[in-house]
Length: 304
Image (cartoon, rainbow, N blue to C red; front, side):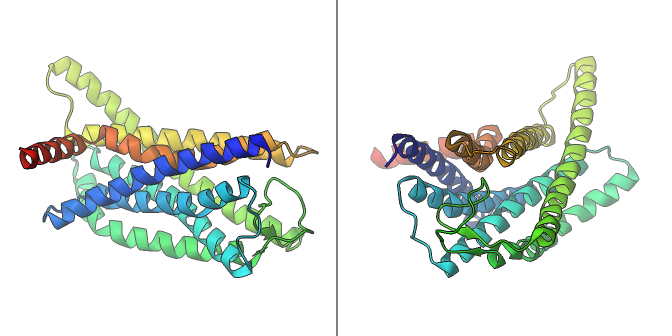
């Protein structure tokens, strides 16, 4: 076993363990609030949906990449490969849909209290669950090609940055490949564009709010403002990592000889958002600090 691949496997293992722990903690936190008869806000529902998507991303392809880096190649048959990669692709699509939905929701929340915006704000919470269900339907439909054109490992698999060591890509032909690529790219670009516009609007509103607060010398950290800052940071992280991952993938596709180092770096970048985003949410949510303090006081009281 190559030392570089072994080190890469340990790096991925650390990234996956940290990311899964953060996302599961978020899910447990929201479940705890429900069990304590505390109503979840609309943003909480979206964040729990995002945490679930991130956890599936890390547990499907992340664990497969670790096993592959450590020398295991034939641990999936045809059916296992189709199911695993289909779940990964759907979860990846759900992550970008959830991030986009969160940015749109928060941009409407901090918008001015004018009659048109007020009507939208009143109706928006009722649209969260249908939007999440719609994102499931959309991604389950779009990503069917992940199941159709994948099979178990084959020695005749064409070596390219898109090929997996534990699965093989069935060549569907140039026309089908172009259509599938356009559909995937169009989906990602539409949601990236929407979340970028919503985040840009939030930055404008936050800047205007900051100037008003400076002029009035009043408090400037309302829950809506804090939540908007968190969402802007989350979207910025996603856009930057998506851009880096796309550029790296383009470089790999245009290389005559595949560089294992660049392929490994590209794989780490692909999982970075799913691993880091829960900790960004935890760090910027004041309720988390209250939760930790309450739990620590409870444990101290039990020990005494």
